[in-house]
Image (cartoon, rainbow, N blue to C red; front, side, top):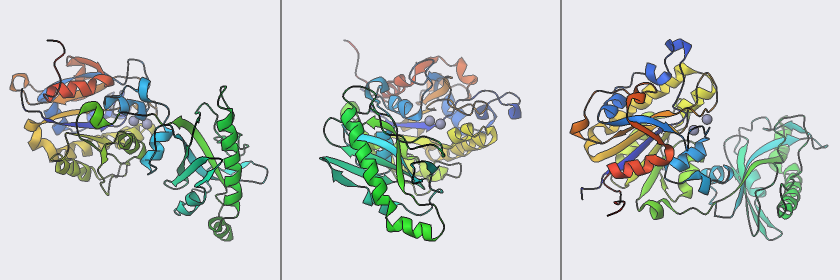
Amino acid sequence: MMEPKKMVLVVLDGLGDRGNKVFNGRTSLQAAYRPNMNRLASMGICGLMHPVAPGIRCGSDTSHLSLLGYDPTKFYSGRGPFEAMGIGVNVQGGDLAFRANFSTVDDNGIVVDRRAGRISENTAPLAKALSFDMDGYKFIVKEGVEHRGALVVRGPNLSDRITDSDPHDSGRRVRDIEPLEAGAENTAYLLNRYLKRAREILRDHPFNRDRQSRGLLPANALLIRGPGKAPSLPSFQELHGMKGACIAGIPMIRGICAMLGMDLINVPGATGRIDTDYKGKFNALRDNLKRYDFIILNVKAPDAAGHDGDPVSKKEAIERTDEALGAIMDMTDDLVICITGDHATPCTLGDHSGDPLPVLFSCKNENRLERRQFDEVSCRKGPLRITSNDVFPYMLQLANRADKYGA
Ligand code: ZN
Ligand code: ZN
């Protein structure tokens, strides 16, 4: 048996694209200066990858689970639990989790501002005030960036088959939580009681009195949405027998990896935005390869540029990622490196699509050395036609870590 290699999965979020006018019909990836990606493609094997399955328009959460070797059709139950975990709640299997907004609601229950004027102060005092036990259930609120946060409910027989309280627009009434199926009535009743209590607490909270005295909107209601019951997931170590870590700027990806028991490597300048510290992330990757068998590194900026319909900024995010890849280019003999995306976010669409993405696996193999390019069109010439579910097993076998199937 050959020596097992370490594995690196670089996910350029929302990588795949369609032709753009500014690049004469080429994609941002085709237009980008990307010598490192092209070199890695030349050292390995390329092709196209469908997120989860052909025709599925994936979110980042389902696709990342799949890339990590977890079938989302078995393990996914909404983004709430991952978001909550990502901002620091220790979510456990069976917990019910929501994304939450601190918002401004008038005396008649009409939403004045869903984001309470995009609060710039830290809302930790409010989150703390809303974290308490009630009716035998534990309620945990955790603050996020600006008006954002998460609510986690812990206790027996919770159901995620309920509606949101968030009407998603200002000028509309806060909704009562309704059960969507038999058996969910108690959960809906419990949450309506909790949210009422939360309004009473927030109304009189010194944080809000202070805001009002400065002419700012009070954060006097918690709007919750996207209920999800936390799945009981086998840990990454249990499932793959490997020690894994994650480098990502955005809470949701960090939350997924934390939920799998992977270590989170903190990079101070990693923001998930275009101004993220690309080099800091790849230097951290390099430094941590001694300690881990597998590291996933997510770069969020290409997805954000895709949503903004900005192919130029997407190209820039790809170029800066390529440059930062330089940190591991002298380690390619000892690594299996996969570069792909989690889904396409075409700039012309401004949202995720079901288009297949380019994928490369770099693993030193002299026999296969030939010049290749890494992009949506060039990768069509490569032999692979896979789904994101295949990525992890494919890396395992290149890394000399796969068990033999059969005798
Ligand atoms: Zn994504
Ligand atoms: Zn996106």
